[in-house]
Amino acid sequence: MTRQTWIPTLIFALASSVHAWAERPADAVASLINNGGEEIGKVELFAAPAGTLLRLDVRDLPPGPKAIHIHARGTCDDHDHGFTDSGGHINPEGKEHGLLNPEGPGAGDLPNFRVGEFGHAWAEFFTGLASLDGSVGARILDEDGAAIVIHENPDDHMSQPIGGAGARIACGVIEAKD
Image 1 (spheres, rainbow, N blue to C red):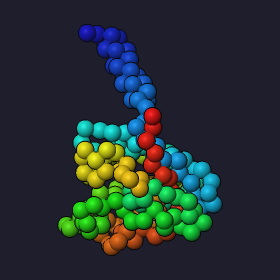
Image 2 (cartoon, helix red, strand yellow; image 1 turned 30 degrees about the vertical axis):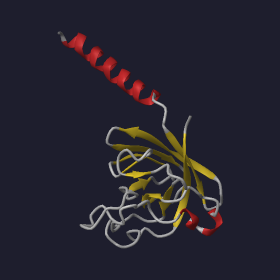
Image 3 (tube, rainbow, N blue to C red; image 1 turned 90 degrees about the vertical axis):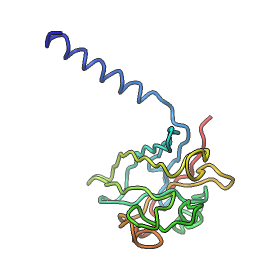
């Protein structure tokens, strides 16, 4: 194959795979709101063979690193009181908090992400510790649901109970898509 032939073929293959990736609908979604109750983004959740892929797209957050967790109750109604009604992280096995903790991690623990200087962040996370239907790890869509919560600071992945992540600044109830 000549160079003139394989470069367009490679570009077509890459474009086709990106298009297919973008076309797959999410299995669940969480519309994120801030402490003022305003919608600021969403997290799409995709069932995967070994867990769950989460795709975050959020705006209007303070710049810098942030923690994100899956919380045990599907409510964000108390936005003016810091989203505490969403409870702690999903953690049916009662493990210690933190991806670096030898006694952890809990099923709701996720890596940190960074918000850019203009308040926008886009990131993907994968967890093999939880799934929408409970087929892998903890069940996200259980009787009382679950929520995605973003904290004001990054998670140190060791400190109890939330890794020093600070106040809850955004929340989204995870809802299955039909």
